[in-house]
Image (cartoon, rainbow, N blue to C red; front, top):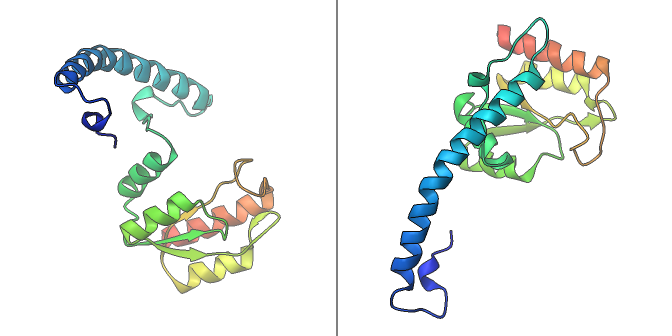
Length: 164
């Protein structure tokens, strides 16, 4: 947070004038921003939709960056004080969120296909896992992508957990 009152040089009228200008701009920006978010949600819904599964723009939530999205997901998915399986290279922002939210992270070893299947199964047998956190795209540090077999194992393990 930046408190603009402490910028220099400090003129007697600076804070009042700046506050007035920001209030005027905020009123304009809020209307424009709402329209922009609605348009963005509509485009995202179209992009995510499949012929057999349509996504409605009301199902899209736009957040203010990845960390904000993770915070919202943690609250909505009710993973606070629960177990989440992560890989050893987990995003530091999620580790910090876990610490603040008392989410218990359990590290699962990875190979070139993602989580090691027998390790993932063992973790799921030892504790009740509420979620899996991974970055299965080129945005992860190793740029690895799980193959169909690796993805199927994660899916199988998660379904086993859900049935517990």
